[in-house]
Every structure is written in C-alpha cells, then in structure tokens.
Length: 349
Image (cartoon, rainbow, N blue to C red):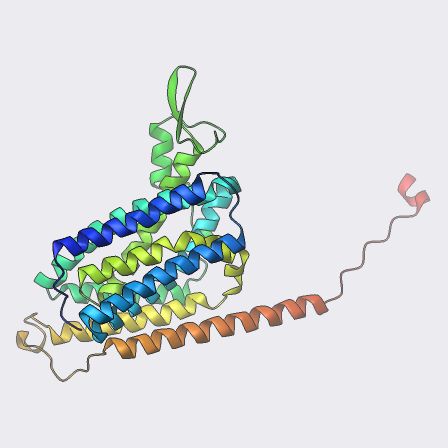
C-alpha cells in the first residue's frame, strides 16, 4: 500500500467546506420546494456528484501521484458498490414507515449527513489504529471475510431487517410519537406537550442502518488505503451520491439478483488482501517469531481496481440477463383459468 499522503490542515478544511457547499446547494435547489424526485432529476444530480468525484481523483493524480489516485478510485468504487446494497434497507425503511414521496429526499439527505459525521469519527479512530497497531489488520480482514460469507450464504438477511427494532424501539418507549406525519417536521406540540413525528423515527432508522453498514465499509476501504484523507473523501462522495441513486434505481435494484455474490467476492478479496498485508506488517510473536513475513505477495491497488471493476461488470451483466430471462419465462406462462361459476340451482342449494 502507498504511504499516507501528507495533507495539511488547510486542505482538509477546504475539502470539508467544498462538501458542505455541495450539500447546501442540494438543500437550496432540491429542498426549497418538496416534491417527488424524478428519474431525470436524479440522473442529473448523479452526474454532478460523479463528476465531482472524478475531478477530485484527477486532483489526487496530479498532486499525489498515480498510485494514490488508484487508491482513491478503488476506494470510491468499492464504497459506492457497498452503498448500493444499503438501498435495499433504505427502501424497506421507507416502505415500512410509508414515507410520503415528496419528503423521501430530505429524509435521505439528513440521514446521510448524520452518517458522514459518524463515519468521520470512525475514520479518525481507524486511521490512528492502523498506524499504531499492525494487528488491527487481522481484525479488519476477519470482519470482511465473515461479512463476505454472510453475503454469499445468507442472502435473505435484508428481508429480516426490522426498521422498528433496536434504537427505534427505544426512542418510541422514551418519547411520545404522533400517529401521522406533519409535513417534514420532526417534532410538534400537541395537547400542550412536545411530541416526535414518524419523520424523526425514520431519520433515526436511516442513520442507524448506515452506521451498521459502516462496520463493513470502513474496514474495506482501509484494506485499499490507510490514508485518512482519501478514505474520508471516498466515503463522502459515495454517500452523497447514494440518495440520488435511490431515486434513479428504484425497483431496478431488485433486478441485481447476483449483487450479494458480487459483494461477497469483493469483500472476501479485500479481506484476503488485508490478511496478506497483516503478515507483511506482522508483530505478533506467535507468527513467524514476531518477524515480518516478506515472502507472501502484496496486491497493489491497480490490480485491486481491475478485479473489483471486473467483478462488478460480471455481476451486473449476469443479473440483468437472469432478470430478463425470468421475465420472458413469466410472460410465456399462460394465466390460470378462472374458476367456473356454480350453476344457479346448485348455488341456491
């Protein structure tokens, strides 16, 4: 892995300010008039966010070098791919709470802003951990390999997700919640007391779900680069484009039937890469006497990028082909005949 970039504090400040500026523009342009987001509008915003991510990558290439740019691009693609799986949970939450279409964009925006703050904390802690303790790579690698196994063999976990569980249940117990929505308001005063609205509960559910997914995504990107600046930027651009992807894909996400297997391959690959890196950085006394294991190969990020892109391409094409084949088979099956009505005499009896 390339060494971390030496990023001055002013560049951190400029990057964060630029990201906040994008969010502010989104708030002003999109949320000034709550409405149902169209496919065309989503496509335009996704193009803007991807363009910003690509421009940032070009800047990393110019000022940091091609290896750092490869680390960022690989991390961004990995995080964006993992975010697609989040959409299943987001759709489930929106459906479960019957969120009005005109307010769904705001819910996602606030939830993702919360996730950015929480992931920023995770990234800061993770960056310090990987620099101080080489054994943390064993833990990260184990998390990813275990998650890959879950993706490959427990594909129905999303169906069992309960957006009313955990923190959401606790909030309902601690605070009074109104029965219906009150526009996009989070709280209202009713019968002389302050009450939460379902909108507040939905935002908690969205933020909590994304925080849970961070347990997989943060180790995954640290398996690609240890640079906290690139890790944060890749996460931020992936998350900011996620809510637009939600409206663009919609029901199309269901057609990516092999997505879980593709994610399993990607996470398993990065997990193995982390284990190999842990062997190179080994300081554990019971492995090779505490010495670095130099004979195992390390996988550079250009190879990682090629493998991840190839897996995504194969997964997407195979999923769409299967979905199309299933649709043709369903269309070819003749409808079941309607049951014959009973004779009038028999019906009277």
